[in-house]
Amino acid sequence: MTIACGIDFGTSNSTVGLADASGARLLPLEGGAATLPSAVFWPTDSPPIMGRAAIAAYLEGEEGRLLRGLKSTLGSGLIHDKTAVGGRAVSFRQVLARFIGHLRAAQQAAAPGDRVILGRPVHFVDDDPAADAAAEATLAEIALDCGWSEVGFQYEPIAAALHYEQTAAAEELVLIVDIGGGTSDVSVVRVGPGRAARPDRSADILANDGIRVGGTDFDRLLSLAEALPHLGYLAPTRGGGTMPRHYYLDLATWHRINALYTARTASDLKALRLLADDPEKIDRMIRLVADRQGHALALRVEAAKMTLSDHDLVRLQMSDLTRGPNPMLDRAGFEAAIEAPVDRIRALLGRVLAAAGVRPDKIGTAFLTGGSSQLPVLRATVRAVVPQAAIATGDMLGSVGTGLALEARRRFG
Image (tube, rainbow, N blue to C red; front, side):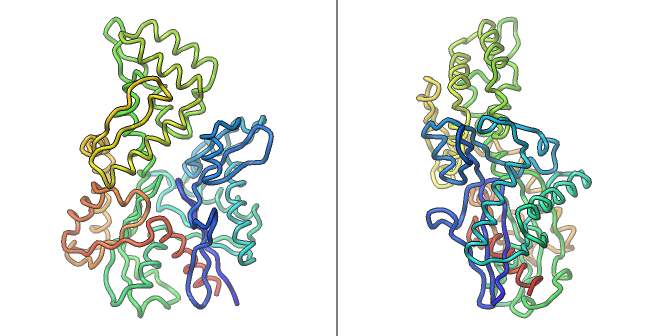
């Protein structure tokens, strides 16, 4: 029996889906979990570790380098840059290849095959078609290097629509809202039991668009608003100025954190401490950077964001990293911090409906997927745009991978 493979390589999490004549399923990738955090920890003297084990190795203090948000390097010049891992310099492209090769090995162990459908956002890069095409080409080259002989792509929100369609009882127009770690993608798709088996579904895709805004942007803005002011972000300096912003922007951006761990940065921060009105805050920043705890703080900010999905208040534990306070965060403050990207998502929803030529009251269901779609402010934003639609959610982190496997089955038989 032919078994088709679809892979959702995400900014924050990845999945491997398999499909045959009986349906689609996700492979267990780590400890029985179908999702694998898109993280690589490269120990100083041993091969790289993936997923939860990578994060755990870093938090336990093992010597090495933790890398996350790798997908965001696609379409940028950073993909070819080299970074120090395991005592040597490797390119981010090579790190991506190791992670995707890990997904390939999991697929081969379960169901050997040499063809795959990879998910992709509507836009890897906003408003730059050449960079977007280069990002897809690079991802295809990496997949071929990992051993697949044929590589296809499908938009992630369309894959989510294919997953939703498996449970659709009647034909309807569905607004697919996929808000992941790095991108937000929206589609209007016509689905139904009678359409699922059609070989060409292009006419059922009424509109499709996306922007490079996602969960990592919400983490960054929450960190800048609530955590980093306790380390001197925007703190006044003598003479009426403020602390330089770029150190804190790097600290709030996952793939830029390691850029702070240099002798030059340490020297600069010590000099800036002498100019600060409140040098104790700069001492906390110096301590965090010297101890290389930037990623640990980023993980705690991310966890606090997730807690605010279900609670109005959460305490951000950071005193052990900085010897400063453990600030209390509230949902209202978080939502104020991310107002700008939420406005962009709201505009995207309206733009896709207009492009589809569909009034909001004609949408039967809004299907939300992607890890960040569970945030109350985003669910409320979708409901405000299509108030009469039913709100449905599937596997927040697995809908795309399942749909990609269904797409692979359709294309490859």
